[in-house]
Image (cartoon, rainbow, N blue to C red):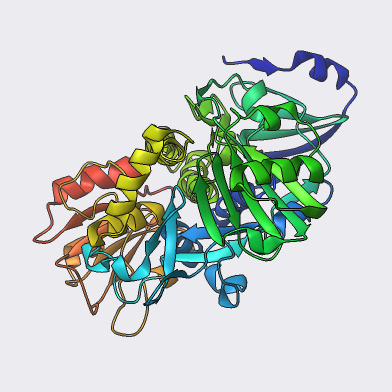
Length: 530
């Protein structure tokens, strides 16, 4: 029998704790976007969920514009669309990216910057989307702007409507797990769940108390995000500027971002940020006499890159920044965390409801850890060519030349926007492991509109009676969908997981032995007692 006890002192102090006698399927620590999205996914599958959040007030100034702005990448946008949440996003309809300014050259019309890699912009007109054949014409956008506050509002509304309990002002202070459940303590209260998931950010208490190893690399810089009033803002060049001493960006009036290659010393010292200190750093890096007359709000961050070596310890799981941290360069952290939630939600729900093969939950780690490792390396690579030394400047010049080519811009955009995301699943078809394309049926129905209930699907473009019979054997988990689509991409049939990932596809007569093996890897066949 597994009995792990974490933070014994806190548990002993809680012997007289007020205990909630409800046994939840899942307790989630953290009511940020990742924890809330995971809660929504679990509730969609009829699981009972409790979310504990340490903050009393969810409306932190650092979650508001412009600090809370995030670029949502293709996998995130698709995930929200498949759950009927995308249309609730409003910010992107009237907000331009505050970190991007038009690129102008003398005598040449301005070009539209689509993004950047290590501060090096890539241009929209250089991106060759024909290299991405599975992006159909009616696909969701590749990138949208949102903000943390907007996402949390939408996800909180969905979670509460789905029966999720959210308790604020209750930090997780200790927990212990037995073979069948986890008891979670928050000061003078305790709660019991079958599982505990840490979605409590980069300083995750669940990760620290749960005994997870957090391996990786230490920071090279302190990053600053600040809103200030400057007496002479015209001294700063617009856009991102990589200098011999670091990087600075001025976008919206008074909003600046700085990278100071001090090894992360200022951030780790946790010294209060003053206008005098910020001015000194900005002057040194920009090589100007910029004057800051008022500091309104500021925060620091680093490029520390670490990842949990396991995402599960018994009945304890990690997701989002609790499982991995890295520099926010490129804005992939939120997208990575939401991808964790989408991947974990249906697998954990199926495990709880005994509708999962024994090994299903293990695939959460094998699939998401490798994706996380790729993002950490993507972040490290950007830092490597932004260092204030001659070697980095040489690399910077070469990468700049490559990004200004059609193939280079297309590659960088594909990586930054998640177009290349693919799980390493067994199967020979090139769609296997990819997000299902947004097929549109002749009646106007799209794949995403059919996935709002969170079930898997067997899609049949040839009205094959044998496939319909096959799907009926998994009817509690798989819906059979048949019809003609406008662009079928030389595909005859596909088996889609609940998270929208193609588990199996064929472009000829189905191999039913192969289909059966794949289906049994992700789903459980219906029994007479179901």
